[in-house]
Image (tube, rainbow, N blue to C red):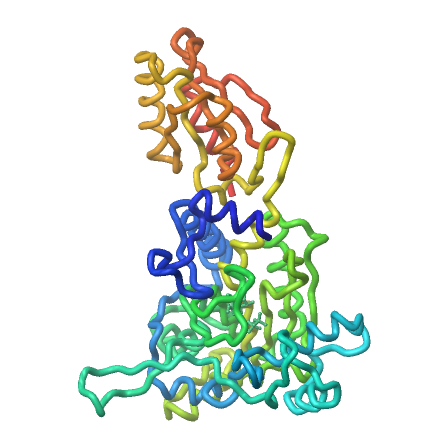
Length: 457
Ligand code: ATP
């Protein structure tokens, strides 16, 4: 993990935010390479789950909604983590995380599962085993700590209105269900997708960008008629889709993935079935992607709280009902971290990021063999100008070729193109493959199609 963090910092993938002011804990900014990788991940998700699907449309909703949304959804009451405080240092911890670490230390992970404990059971367990803080001090009883971020709208003191930064993007989809239904020709079963920021007042953060207060979510609410479609079949179908995306599109090693079913105690208040797709991060198997069967819970709640009719009318049967929903929900920032961990290779003389070519921040790099040979630079510049219109391309004329290759390997550029003296004679260039380090001569006129073929998603 340290190596990934260091690479991110060194090469400009991820910076600690506000670092000139000493930084802010658990908050990160994405640098020139990071923003490219993150955008490529999000675009790929959008392509697969929105553009290539006839039955899914996208939206982009606000971060701040009417505060009643969160009352209706149950988040003001139910969206909490169990918090304990060190009685001496007053440091705060997530009770379930402390118990998890304690069980690990005892080697009792198979004997007790913290995910299976209700809030009350967790409380009892801590008491019974006299679990202490990491500093070895007494801790308080667990309290329910709400994760929603509060803020205020309005400029007049005293008249400010309390609102929340959204704790999940999903609610923005539910509150637009009627709009989408009325303004498109879409019919059940169909999905609405959204990518955007979400905010949670997490008690324990850490592990770099894995868990932060501010993060992104890519969510789909897939609406269906439970009388016409078997939810278990649909759910399985979504599990397969997600698996395929992670393994084939993102290129993740299958051995590092597992599905984990939520126990009754762990499942969210709105869910009838939840599975997490976990990835084996350097700090253990942790959730990457959640898949939940939210039933008709959310739409029913909004129907009730808003007083608006959120039912669906089925032309075929003449039935009016509130659709049920299955929700695949993933954090692009967690995908980002997983993809980097999965791609990182240390070899004898180089560090290499073996990213899928279409995910790489730069698709190609152009090098004139010698920076002081005018003809070479001119020719290379011409090729660069042409390619950069099609692909994100890097220009580098500094230092020796070996150094330039190593820099590109480390940032994951799949193809390095060198313009040498032979180029001036026969209009061919050397294309070097990042992973195999093999080189081949390619005609300049064929270069675009050569890359296009290899960058296909
Ligand atoms: P965890 O158990 O890790 O707290 P969660 O079960 O609360 O996650 P969900 O509510 O299912 O998470 O959110 C869906 C997805 O959003 C997660 O699978 C994860 O990829 C992402 N996510 C959730 N919380 C965070 C966070 N604090 N930082 C980064 N990504 C997050």
